[in-house]
Image 1: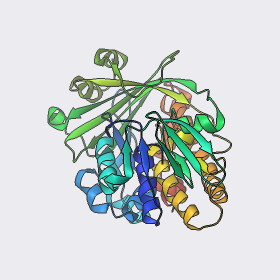
Image 2: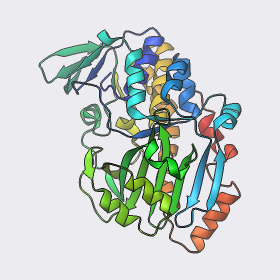
Image 3: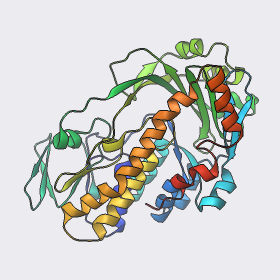
Amino acid sequence: MIGAGIGGLTAALSLLDAGFDVHVHERASALTETGAGIQLSPNATRVLHGLGLEKELALTAVRPLAFHQRRWDDGRTLQRAPLGDQVQARFGFPYYHMHRADLLALLAAAFPAERLHLGHRLTGITDHGSHVRAHFGDGGTDDADVLVGADGIHSRVRAELFGAENPRFTGCVAYRGLVPADRVRDLAIEVSAQAWLGPGQHFVHYFVSGQRLLNFVAVLERDAWTHESWTDRGDLADVLAAFDGWHPQVREIVTAADETYLWALFDRAPLERWSRGRVTLLGDACHAMLPFLAQGAAQAVEDGATLARCLADGGDPAEALRRYETSRLARTSRVQAMSAANKTRFHLPDGPDQRDRDADLAAGATGWSFDAIAWLYEHRA
Protein backbone atom coordinates (compact mmCIF):
# COMPACT_ATOMS: atom_id res chain seq x y z
CA MET A 1 0.00 0.00 0.00
CA ILE A 2 1.37 3.42 -0.99
CA GLY A 3 -0.11 6.14 1.20
CA ALA A 4 -1.16 6.15 4.86
CA GLY A 5 -4.12 8.48 4.67
CA ILE A 6 -7.67 7.61 5.64
CA GLY A 7 -8.28 5.54 2.50
CA GLY A 8 -4.94 3.76 2.59
CA LEU A 9 -5.11 2.78 6.25
CA THR A 10 -8.74 1.65 5.99
CA ALA A 11 -7.83 -0.51 3.00
CA ALA A 12 -4.79 -1.89 4.83
CA LEU A 13 -6.91 -2.81 7.85
CA SER A 14 -9.52 -4.44 5.59
CA LEU A 15 -6.83 -6.47 3.82
CA LEU A 16 -5.17 -7.44 7.10
CA ASP A 17 -8.56 -8.52 8.45
CA ALA A 18 -8.96 -10.70 5.35
CA GLY A 19 -5.68 -12.47 6.09
CA PHE A 20 -3.27 -10.67 3.76
CA ASP A 21 0.33 -9.73 4.51
CA VAL A 22 -0.01 -5.95 4.22
CA HIS A 23 2.63 -3.22 4.45
CA VAL A 24 1.99 0.52 4.10
CA HIS A 25 4.59 2.96 2.79
CA GLU A 26 4.08 6.68 3.48
CA ARG A 27 6.27 9.51 2.18
CA ALA A 28 5.79 11.71 5.28
CA SER A 29 8.07 11.13 8.26
CA ALA A 30 5.10 11.40 10.66
CA LEU A 31 1.37 10.91 10.31
CA THR A 32 -0.21 14.34 10.53
CA GLU A 33 -3.45 15.85 9.25
CA THR A 34 -4.11 19.54 8.82
CA GLY A 35 -7.09 20.66 10.88
CA ALA A 36 -10.34 19.95 9.07
CA GLY A 37 -13.59 18.19 9.63
CA ILE A 38 -14.86 15.10 7.91
CA GLN A 39 -18.31 13.54 7.55
CA LEU A 40 -18.80 9.77 7.69
CA SER A 41 -22.16 8.51 6.47
CA PRO A 42 -23.56 5.01 7.18
CA ASN A 43 -22.02 3.50 4.03
CA ALA A 44 -18.60 4.29 5.59
CA THR A 45 -19.33 3.65 9.27
CA ARG A 46 -20.69 0.20 8.29
CA VAL A 47 -17.16 -0.65 7.08
CA LEU A 48 -15.38 0.92 10.06
CA HIS A 49 -17.63 -0.83 12.59
CA GLY A 50 -16.99 -4.07 10.71
CA LEU A 51 -13.28 -3.56 11.39
CA GLY A 52 -14.00 -3.42 15.12
CA LEU A 53 -13.60 0.36 15.49
CA GLU A 54 -17.05 1.23 16.86
CA LYS A 55 -15.93 2.07 20.41
CA GLU A 56 -12.92 4.07 19.26
CA LEU A 57 -15.03 6.11 16.83
CA ALA A 58 -17.55 6.98 19.52
CA LEU A 59 -14.83 8.53 21.72
CA THR A 60 -14.24 11.55 19.48
CA ALA A 61 -16.95 11.43 16.81
CA VAL A 62 -20.02 13.67 16.97
CA ARG A 63 -23.45 12.35 16.00
CA PRO A 64 -25.29 15.27 14.36
CA LEU A 65 -29.01 15.62 14.89
CA ALA A 66 -29.74 16.86 11.38
CA PHE A 67 -28.51 18.26 8.10
CA HIS A 68 -29.87 21.80 8.08
CA GLN A 69 -29.83 23.90 4.88
CA ARG A 70 -30.48 27.60 5.43
CA ARG A 71 -30.82 30.82 3.49
CA TRP A 72 -27.76 33.05 3.46
CA ASP A 73 -29.21 36.34 4.71
CA ASP A 74 -32.03 35.68 7.17
CA GLY A 75 -31.15 32.11 8.22
CA ARG A 76 -34.53 30.79 7.16
CA THR A 77 -34.68 26.96 7.04
CA LEU A 78 -34.76 25.61 3.48
CA GLN A 79 -34.60 21.96 4.50
CA ARG A 80 -33.89 20.12 7.73
CA ALA A 81 -33.21 16.42 7.16
CA PRO A 82 -32.94 14.23 10.28
CA LEU A 83 -29.75 12.35 11.12
CA GLY A 84 -28.93 11.11 14.65
CA ASP A 85 -31.06 8.18 15.81
CA GLN A 86 -33.27 8.35 12.72
CA VAL A 87 -30.48 7.80 10.21
CA GLN A 88 -29.13 4.91 12.31
CA ALA A 89 -32.58 3.32 12.54
CA ARG A 90 -33.07 3.60 8.78
CA PHE A 91 -29.61 2.50 7.61
CA GLY A 92 -28.29 0.47 10.56
CA PHE A 93 -25.17 2.57 11.25
CA PRO A 94 -24.49 6.09 12.55
CA TYR A 95 -23.66 9.31 10.77
CA TYR A 96 -20.55 10.91 12.28
CA HIS A 97 -18.71 14.22 12.17
CA MET A 98 -15.01 13.94 13.02
CA HIS A 99 -11.75 15.81 12.96
CA ARG A 100 -9.62 14.24 10.22
CA ALA A 101 -6.65 13.97 12.61
CA ASP A 102 -8.79 12.04 15.11
CA LEU A 103 -9.83 9.52 12.46
CA LEU A 104 -6.31 9.15 11.10
CA ALA A 105 -4.92 8.55 14.59
CA LEU A 106 -7.60 5.96 15.30
CA LEU A 107 -6.83 4.05 12.10
CA ALA A 108 -3.07 4.21 12.66
CA ALA A 109 -3.44 2.91 16.23
CA ALA A 110 -5.38 -0.10 14.91
CA PHE A 111 -2.72 -0.97 12.33
CA PRO A 112 0.44 -2.84 13.47
CA ALA A 113 3.26 -0.32 13.80
CA GLU A 114 5.84 -2.70 12.31
CA ARG A 115 3.85 -2.77 9.06
CA LEU A 116 3.78 1.02 8.67
CA HIS A 117 6.89 2.49 7.01
CA LEU A 118 7.21 6.27 7.26
CA GLY A 119 9.60 8.43 5.26
CA HIS A 120 9.25 6.17 2.21
CA ARG A 121 8.80 8.36 -0.87
CA LEU A 122 7.83 6.35 -3.92
CA THR A 123 10.02 7.10 -6.94
CA GLY A 124 8.99 4.35 -9.36
CA ILE A 125 7.31 1.02 -9.99
CA THR A 126 8.58 -2.00 -11.89
CA ASP A 127 6.10 -4.69 -12.90
CA HIS A 128 7.90 -8.02 -13.19
CA GLY A 129 4.76 -9.96 -14.15
CA SER A 130 4.91 -12.33 -11.19
CA HIS A 131 5.30 -9.42 -8.72
CA VAL A 132 5.61 -5.63 -8.51
CA ARG A 133 8.66 -3.80 -7.16
CA ALA A 134 8.26 -0.38 -5.52
CA HIS A 135 11.31 1.92 -5.52
CA PHE A 136 11.77 4.55 -2.80
CA GLY A 137 13.76 7.75 -2.49
CA ASP A 138 16.17 6.31 0.04
CA GLY A 139 17.24 3.65 -2.45
CA GLY A 140 15.18 0.90 -0.87
CA THR A 141 12.72 -1.38 -2.63
CA ASP A 142 9.83 -3.61 -1.68
CA ASP A 143 8.31 -6.48 -3.66
CA ALA A 144 4.60 -7.28 -3.54
CA ASP A 145 2.04 -9.46 -5.25
CA VAL A 146 -0.24 -6.40 -5.51
CA LEU A 147 0.55 -2.70 -5.17
CA VAL A 148 -2.20 -0.20 -4.28
CA GLY A 149 -1.81 3.53 -4.85
CA ALA A 150 -3.69 5.33 -2.08
CA ASP A 151 -1.43 8.35 -2.38
CA GLY A 152 -3.94 11.13 -2.88
CA ILE A 153 -4.81 13.67 -5.54
CA HIS A 154 -1.19 14.08 -6.66
CA SER A 155 -0.70 10.31 -6.84
CA ARG A 156 2.70 9.13 -8.01
CA VAL A 157 1.25 5.66 -8.62
CA ARG A 158 -1.42 7.09 -10.95
CA ALA A 159 1.27 9.01 -12.84
CA GLU A 160 3.32 5.81 -13.19
CA LEU A 161 0.29 3.97 -14.60
CA PHE A 162 -1.38 6.58 -16.79
CA GLY A 163 0.87 9.62 -17.08
CA ALA A 164 0.25 13.20 -16.04
CA GLU A 165 -3.28 14.43 -15.41
CA ASN A 166 -4.90 17.76 -16.25
CA PRO A 167 -7.24 18.84 -13.44
CA ARG A 168 -9.63 21.74 -14.14
CA PHE A 169 -10.11 24.65 -11.74
CA THR A 170 -13.78 24.75 -10.76
CA GLY A 171 -13.92 28.46 -10.12
CA CYS A 172 -14.20 27.84 -6.36
CA VAL A 173 -11.87 28.17 -3.41
CA ALA A 174 -12.60 26.97 0.12
CA TYR A 175 -11.47 28.56 3.36
CA ARG A 176 -11.55 26.13 6.28
CA GLY A 177 -10.96 26.57 9.95
CA LEU A 178 -11.61 25.33 13.47
CA VAL A 179 -13.08 27.37 16.33
CA PRO A 180 -12.98 26.34 20.02
CA ALA A 181 -16.61 25.65 20.88
CA ASP A 182 -16.57 27.83 24.00
CA ARG A 183 -15.93 30.92 21.85
CA VAL A 184 -19.29 30.52 20.09
CA ARG A 185 -21.29 29.12 23.00
CA ASP A 186 -23.49 32.22 23.13
CA LEU A 187 -24.72 31.43 19.58
CA ALA A 188 -26.43 28.26 20.89
CA ILE A 189 -25.50 26.39 17.71
CA GLU A 190 -27.36 23.10 17.29
CA VAL A 191 -25.30 19.92 16.95
CA SER A 192 -26.04 19.53 13.26
CA ALA A 193 -24.43 20.08 9.89
CA GLN A 194 -25.55 23.54 8.80
CA ALA A 195 -25.15 24.70 5.21
CA TRP A 196 -25.93 28.34 4.40
CA LEU A 197 -26.69 28.73 0.67
CA GLY A 198 -26.20 32.05 -1.09
CA PRO A 199 -25.41 33.70 -4.42
CA GLY A 200 -22.03 32.50 -5.64
CA GLN A 201 -20.93 31.00 -2.33
CA HIS A 202 -21.94 28.89 0.66
CA PHE A 203 -20.86 28.25 4.24
CA VAL A 204 -20.89 24.95 6.16
CA HIS A 205 -20.22 24.31 9.84
CA TYR A 206 -20.46 21.40 12.29
CA PHE A 207 -18.91 20.22 15.56
CA VAL A 208 -16.00 17.75 15.76
CA SER A 209 -13.67 16.30 18.42
CA GLY A 210 -16.36 15.49 20.96
CA GLN A 211 -18.01 18.89 20.35
CA ARG A 212 -14.88 20.71 21.55
CA LEU A 213 -14.29 22.32 18.14
CA LEU A 214 -16.55 23.84 15.49
CA ASN A 215 -15.35 23.12 11.95
CA PHE A 216 -16.26 25.54 9.17
CA VAL A 217 -15.79 25.64 5.41
CA ALA A 218 -16.48 28.79 3.40
CA VAL A 219 -16.67 28.23 -0.38
CA LEU A 220 -16.33 31.23 -2.71
CA GLU A 221 -16.28 31.60 -6.48
CA ARG A 222 -13.10 32.95 -8.07
CA ASP A 223 -12.11 33.59 -11.70
CA ALA A 224 -8.77 31.77 -11.81
CA TRP A 225 -6.29 29.78 -9.73
CA THR A 226 -3.15 27.81 -10.51
CA HIS A 227 -2.18 26.09 -7.26
CA GLU A 228 -3.87 23.13 -5.57
CA SER A 229 -3.09 22.66 -1.89
CA TRP A 230 -4.78 21.85 1.44
CA THR A 231 -2.24 23.78 3.50
CA ASP A 232 -1.99 27.33 2.10
CA ARG A 233 -2.71 29.94 4.74
CA GLY A 234 -5.73 32.16 4.13
CA ASP A 235 -6.74 35.56 5.48
CA LEU A 236 -9.77 35.72 7.76
CA ALA A 237 -10.34 39.32 6.66
CA ASP A 238 -10.93 38.05 3.12
CA VAL A 239 -13.56 35.62 4.37
CA LEU A 240 -15.35 38.30 6.37
CA ALA A 241 -15.33 40.65 3.39
CA ALA A 242 -16.77 37.93 1.13
CA PHE A 243 -19.59 37.22 3.60
CA ASP A 244 -20.49 40.84 4.21
CA GLY A 245 -24.28 41.05 4.57
CA TRP A 246 -24.68 37.38 5.48
CA HIS A 247 -26.43 36.19 8.63
CA PRO A 248 -24.64 37.29 11.84
CA GLN A 249 -24.04 33.67 12.92
CA VAL A 250 -21.87 33.05 9.86
CA ARG A 251 -19.77 36.12 10.46
CA GLU A 252 -19.43 35.51 14.21
CA ILE A 253 -18.07 32.01 13.57
CA VAL A 254 -15.41 33.38 11.22
CA THR A 255 -14.55 36.17 13.66
CA ALA A 256 -13.99 33.60 16.43
CA ALA A 257 -11.34 31.71 14.44
CA ASP A 258 -7.59 32.25 14.89
CA GLU A 259 -6.57 31.10 11.40
CA THR A 260 -7.87 29.70 8.16
CA TYR A 261 -6.45 27.53 5.39
CA LEU A 262 -7.17 28.14 1.72
CA TRP A 263 -7.96 25.25 -0.61
CA ALA A 264 -8.52 25.71 -4.35
CA LEU A 265 -11.04 23.20 -5.73
CA PHE A 266 -10.04 21.35 -8.88
CA ASP A 267 -12.26 18.92 -10.76
CA ARG A 268 -11.20 15.71 -12.47
CA ALA A 269 -13.03 13.63 -15.02
CA PRO A 270 -13.60 10.01 -13.93
CA LEU A 271 -10.78 7.70 -15.02
CA GLU A 272 -11.67 5.05 -17.58
CA ARG A 273 -9.64 2.51 -15.62
CA TRP A 274 -7.84 2.28 -12.28
CA SER A 275 -5.64 -0.79 -12.72
CA ARG A 276 -2.82 -2.13 -14.82
CA GLY A 277 -1.52 -5.62 -14.15
CA ARG A 278 -0.91 -6.02 -10.42
CA VAL A 279 -1.20 -2.30 -9.63
CA THR A 280 -4.39 -0.39 -8.82
CA LEU A 281 -5.58 2.89 -7.31
CA LEU A 282 -7.83 3.83 -4.41
CA GLY A 283 -9.56 6.93 -3.04
CA ASP A 284 -8.47 10.38 -4.19
CA ALA A 285 -5.80 8.83 -6.41
CA CYS A 286 -8.54 7.64 -8.78
CA HIS A 287 -11.73 9.58 -7.94
CA ALA A 288 -10.97 12.85 -6.18
CA MET A 289 -14.28 14.56 -5.42
CA LEU A 290 -15.47 18.06 -4.76
CA PRO A 291 -16.63 18.39 -1.14
CA PHE A 292 -20.27 19.16 -1.96
CA LEU A 293 -21.72 15.75 -1.10
CA ALA A 294 -19.44 14.92 1.87
CA GLN A 295 -18.46 11.59 0.29
CA GLY A 296 -14.75 11.78 -0.50
CA ALA A 297 -13.53 9.85 2.54
CA ALA A 298 -16.58 7.58 2.58
CA GLN A 299 -15.93 6.43 -0.97
CA ALA A 300 -12.28 5.74 -0.16
CA VAL A 301 -13.41 3.64 2.83
CA GLU A 302 -15.75 1.72 0.52
CA ASP A 303 -12.87 1.16 -1.92
CA GLY A 304 -10.78 -0.53 0.75
CA ALA A 305 -13.53 -2.94 1.76
CA THR A 306 -14.33 -3.85 -1.84
CA LEU A 307 -10.67 -4.33 -2.72
CA ALA A 308 -10.17 -6.70 0.21
CA ARG A 309 -13.25 -8.73 -0.80
CA CYS A 310 -12.17 -9.02 -4.43
CA LEU A 311 -8.67 -10.19 -3.51
CA ALA A 312 -10.04 -12.57 -0.86
CA ASP A 313 -12.20 -14.23 -3.51
CA GLY A 314 -8.94 -15.58 -4.94
CA GLY A 315 -7.76 -16.20 -8.47
CA ASP A 316 -5.32 -14.22 -10.55
CA PRO A 317 -4.41 -10.94 -8.80
CA ALA A 318 -4.75 -8.88 -11.97
CA GLU A 319 -8.23 -10.29 -12.55
CA ALA A 320 -9.16 -9.55 -8.93
CA LEU A 321 -8.11 -5.92 -9.45
CA ARG A 322 -10.26 -5.76 -12.59
CA ARG A 323 -13.24 -7.00 -10.55
CA TYR A 324 -12.53 -4.34 -7.94
CA GLU A 325 -12.35 -1.62 -10.56
CA THR A 326 -15.54 -2.80 -12.27
CA SER A 327 -17.35 -2.94 -8.94
CA ARG A 328 -16.44 0.63 -8.05
CA LEU A 329 -16.20 2.72 -11.24
CA ALA A 330 -19.88 3.42 -11.92
CA ARG A 331 -20.67 4.21 -8.29
CA THR A 332 -17.77 6.56 -7.67
CA SER A 333 -18.35 8.29 -11.02
CA ARG A 334 -21.97 8.91 -10.03
CA VAL A 335 -20.92 10.38 -6.69
CA GLN A 336 -18.32 12.57 -8.41
CA ALA A 337 -20.98 13.92 -10.79
CA MET A 338 -23.46 14.62 -7.99
CA SER A 339 -20.80 16.39 -5.95
CA ALA A 340 -19.95 18.63 -8.90
CA ALA A 341 -23.61 19.39 -9.62
CA ASN A 342 -24.17 20.58 -6.05
CA LYS A 343 -21.78 23.47 -6.63
CA THR A 344 -24.28 25.02 -9.04
CA ARG A 345 -27.26 24.20 -6.84
CA PHE A 346 -25.69 25.67 -3.71
CA HIS A 347 -24.63 28.92 -5.42
CA LEU A 348 -27.75 29.97 -7.34
CA PRO A 349 -28.28 33.74 -7.44
CA ASP A 350 -31.51 34.96 -5.91
CA GLY A 351 -34.23 34.65 -8.50
CA PRO A 352 -36.53 32.11 -10.20
CA ASP A 353 -34.04 29.18 -10.19
CA GLN A 354 -33.23 29.79 -6.53
CA ARG A 355 -36.92 29.86 -5.64
CA ASP A 356 -37.49 26.59 -7.52
CA ARG A 357 -34.55 25.01 -5.66
CA ASP A 358 -35.90 26.19 -2.32
CA ALA A 359 -39.32 24.76 -3.14
CA ASP A 360 -37.71 21.41 -3.99
CA LEU A 361 -35.80 21.48 -0.71
CA ALA A 362 -38.95 22.20 1.26
CA ALA A 363 -40.70 19.28 -0.48
CA GLY A 364 -37.84 16.86 0.29
CA ALA A 365 -37.34 16.31 -3.42
CA THR A 366 -33.57 16.71 -3.40
CA GLY A 367 -30.72 14.29 -2.71
CA TRP A 368 -30.88 14.87 1.04
CA SER A 369 -34.18 13.09 1.68
CA PHE A 370 -33.86 9.56 3.08
CA ASP A 371 -35.55 7.97 0.09
CA ALA A 372 -33.37 9.83 -2.39
CA ILE A 373 -30.13 9.11 -0.54
CA ALA A 374 -30.84 5.44 0.24
CA TRP A 375 -28.81 4.17 -2.75
CA LEU A 376 -25.76 5.86 -1.22
CA TYR A 377 -26.15 5.10 2.49
CA GLU A 378 -27.44 1.51 2.21
CA HIS A 379 -24.46 0.33 0.16
CA ARG A 380 -22.51 -2.66 1.53
CA ALA A 381 -19.01 -2.29 0.18
